[in-house]
Image 1: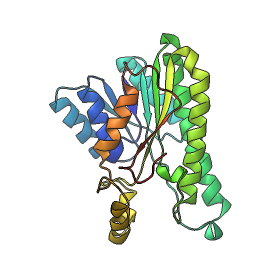
Image 2 (image 1 turned 30 degrees about the vertical axis):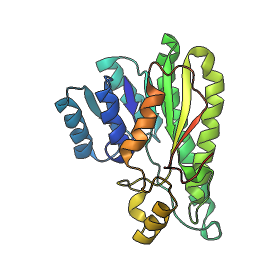
Image 3 (image 1 turned 90 degrees about the vertical axis):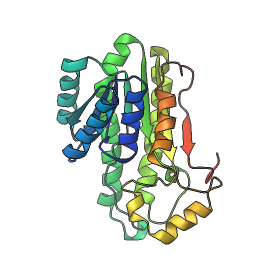
Image 4 (image 1 turned 120 degrees about the horizontal axis):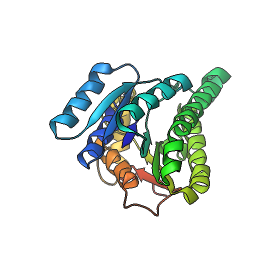
Length: 244
């Protein structure tokens, strides 16, 4: 069973649909968009899969614990965590930024990852198997103007994931990162003007920006039961815009 945080739209919704199509029961976590989350569940069920929508703010420990209890009562422990929920951030230069804006993003990003991971680990540890995938961004390695809050917080998340990969490997739990470049049909894409998107497309060898389904494919590879020997790695889903 898979828990996908922030799964009512964009990358999270595409991931939930794909994992369900591959036979997993999927928990569609959402913050405010109950209608959109239920539409994702309906799509999954119409295709013959199993899903449930569960509201929880992943920045709040009590909300996460309530969600996990609800899921365990219905389906048992979570085998796969896809932590995709986007914590809000400001787009501005460092010179114009307050510590509350930079430090607040860092704190919220890491606290959400810490809390949701803590909540799913007991079941994974007990069964000696688990898959944890964190959604990051190419901006953690390749800076772009105005994106210091997002890039810095995701860089911290990536190093956090590597430490977990080292610690949890002996327990049969893999931890990996999917780092997309620009992705169409997401909230982040909506803040970019047409000229910026044109420049990004021109800089991409494959000639287009990613779609949520492209990112979901990478997540699904990491989530697979047969993918037992990849951990502490980063999948860059950017069409060749940045190669590392």
